[in-house]
Image (cartoon, rainbow, N blue to C red):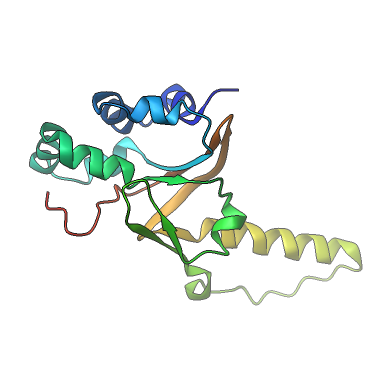
Length: 169
């Protein structure tokens, strides 16, 4: 297996985040360390939601870029199931991320299923677990792919670039 940085780089769908990590002194070395780390990696499409000027401003300012990148990294090993037991996670940047599950806002089906015994229990528990995991948000960004395991941590792919409070783009 690879560490969390190598895992993110190998996916090739998170090039902007990986390029940012490579351009900030010390971050790649930190992520190559023993960890464990949990990283919330925004897709390139998430970066594209920012305007061209915002992206240029972010990548032109090493201090702001480092702050934003560290805001996506949490010391510790957190699976999707672990995230459901948390309200906040403290980041390498120093501020907290808000963890939320919007499952309570999702409509539940009312279709009756006629099966007996263990089959119903298995189907219903698996369906609920999947729905709950898919409903996890980090500061409003949805987790698109959870539990990507690496040697020194865990990676979750999200659909939003997380900007620390009081950081202007």
